[in-house]
Image 1 (tube, rainbow, N blue to C red):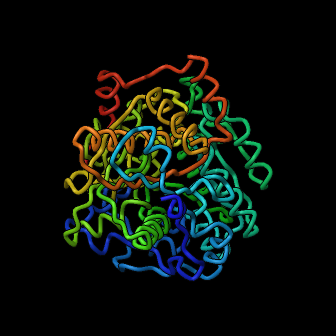
Image 2: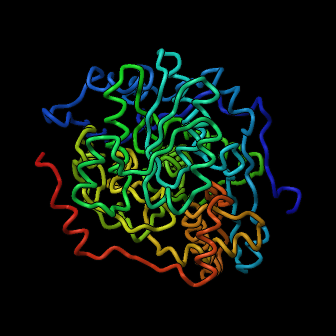
Length: 451
């Protein structure tokens, strides 16, 4: 057992192409709509803020899209990432289950976000763009894009959700090391930000607000494009290196998962791990995929499947997705990367048609699981990743109750070494659960567009 604890692929075995699940969907996606005309958007509608290669990937029906050599070369600084058998965690749980985790926290920025940041910076550089504007919640995406822009010689402007900006000062420092400019959102720099502050001067901010600011910034400058760290099809496409590697690594170990678990906010981490296995499910494999989200922002488990804006100022396309309403303001939980009102249209469609499952947890039980994981496996997880750990532990405990073995695979999407203030709060007993009350969900859904 000890010999197989870490399973690596060689560099030559790393995927040469990303997997596009759009080619295999049993039910086609509903089209994204123009925010002004409510008609299906075309490439010309996205061209002001995205390079054409990413627009093509957004709508592509090709199953495999090659990874550019320049991006693959950058991947090789940490990919293939290790797949690790959680032997000590299994012992602590006294479970017959086998638990594997794919460790994306080994990347230079400490999370999976660099998989798409490098690709997006590359395609924008090829298109002649000089500057990228983006939003970030917990700061992992902003860190990844700042590093990627530095590598490809681009400027980077990051609008960071204010509550995370205050909770996670070293994320800001990390971004600035790589030349990123970091602004707490909502800010006075954009009309979108000023409008929020005029009504709510003490606003904690949200990803919906920060997205509005970044899109407004990008649209105002000809040298600037917008980069998104989750939700959109091309972003999830780039993340499929995670699941493709994990599938190959498990095959090397002579194993295959009964269940795949990943945390889910906008969908990039979940889609990146789960999509290659969902493709197997389409072909008859008996594998479950479980998306885990916070009870404070329960998009899949308590939201509605409807058309909605991706941002507060209604600048983005209207997408069919599970949503809590673009005006929904989630509580300031430490898993800042999971505080998004909507979800990926791809993940949403898979959930709506019952190809995947979803569950939600309170933050204290997730931190409890993270502490157990750290004390058994030796890695401090990011607060977002703690949700996947909690989901995997529940699967392992269910196996113990049933007296049956099962193979569990989850993504450790990031490390928590810049999130230790959150652990301080948990260990001091200051962390509180903030499950979303039904009244806030009802109010948030009043703003849905009439489509």
